[in-house]
Image (cartoon, rainbow, N blue to C red; front, side):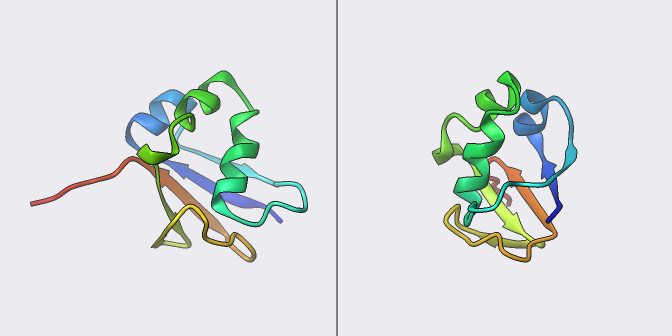
Length: 85
């Protein structure tokens, strides 16, 4: 199952690119599991994902907590908290 990962703001800067296609191994059930796995890909990934309290996710363009399931997801975006006004 390939998932298109999108990274924004300082997450993108630390990872080193704005998107990548990944094929996570079987057994990863949640965004948090996926983040753990991605953290081992490079020092940039590890730095970007070190503090989960600073991360937000969108699964197929819908905001969700990091314990959201990834089964069937085509796209997952990881980004810092945002504000508007």
